[in-house]
Image 1: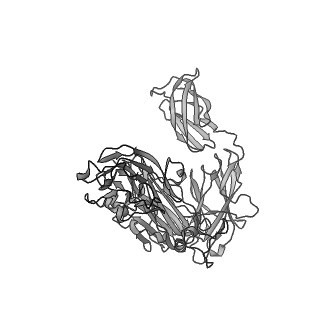
Image 2: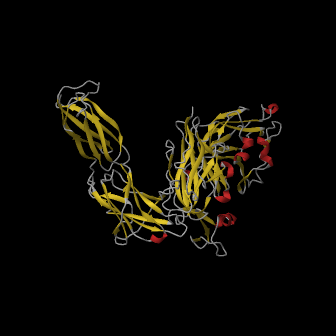
Image 3: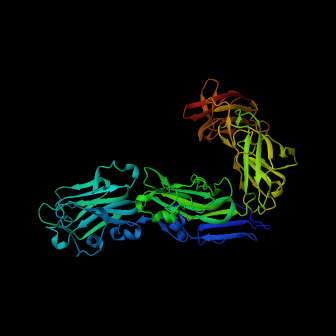
Length: 638
């Protein structure tokens, strides 16, 4: 049963007031109601089936509905062979020139008429220079689980016109495996290799029905020579699959936002079976084509981005080139950002990836399924603000190295670039690994200005500052604060926004050079001393406690620091007596680098209150390098 995770999240406070810049886009979910919008907010509904190759969209092996997309699911009772073309597949046959698309001669094999047949009389050879075997490749247009194949002659010829010898081969289409599979079929430089799953040399069965391995198949080979005696015939060649297609893909058209826009939150609605996955991602860029196209000049390995008239190649002009001229397609990394990592669909939303305002956006979803488990994507929704707060806000932090677990004074430097139509901003938001111990100053061009701390917690802080508009274009802004760092490569990401326009998206700042003399040009901070240390400080507050129910020192607070944990580690606070006897666990769970705390109320693993005395609280962290630990003694008294 599908585990439902459908959430509609705008992640925006859609209030009244100036909302001329906000646009909400939704792909799919056509039957969902239009969200309630403040005056001036635009809503754009896009359909799942609006994908066009000319706009860089792509759909593979998906069922498309107005309200969702999901991997195709095969009915095990439906013969796929006559439906290959409508599913994006095809059948190829081997002739003396190589592999070619099958024609009317082969079409009788899947015309669903058992009285029309393909005769295995050797007519596919030509004066001894043709191919020896009748060879067909069934291409499915995607990877599917093919359960079985079945072929047979007309009923009245079952006793004399069956195939004596044949081969069935399969391939998942992975180009990295080319040349490694056990059997190669083809001629004159046109070769395709397969793994053989069935090979008959003395078949006497007229109706042949064979099961195939339960693995993804993109193409299947059928090959048969002439019979040693008599001829063979096939009235119908049937292929049956089952379950969800193992892989499927959706790539949206490149969406034009109408101008450079600040990218906001991405939200979604999905259903994913246990064992299946949906990898939802996005990217953004500055022009309508995320790719670069290359043409071979036939001068050695030389290739060019221009056509024969000296014009930049486009998707359309590249597709018009002769195949030998097409020298490949690569991502345009100058004008486009790369695809984001897959979003966590168990969450309701997440920020769009984009280091600066962009005009073009593209969304993709990669589906991975098993035979029984699939996923469904109901909608994807995102918000943008156009024009943005600023055309660009460069930012860097100094210093770029800090001592582990020691409060360090950082200066967060910003350089805004604003044009006349940009909205401007009056709030700066900075993410921190732990709660900042203080925001000490805000400076404009070296002069301190008044500021207001609007939020300060363990995830970061926000400061209200004098308004930044075009009059302050190119002015150096500095925010000085103190914070502890526990992990190498900690990112202090930031955003700016206008508090008078709370419905607009918060614009991310762009890492880059703000001050020439400051090293780094980054928002990432490293550690001066790593040395493999994982467990930092371990503090007990208070060191002696009295769990007698008077609500005064009834529990001990266990505070600890984890340093430079890669990913997530298993952490436990374990209770021992002074003889080393294990009495129970106070806490166990995953944790990353940072400051954490747990409480102990004086009870053992069974919930019984322990007698007064001294006990050992041991912090244990399971890492790839083994268990790292630190202990403290606590006094329990009544």
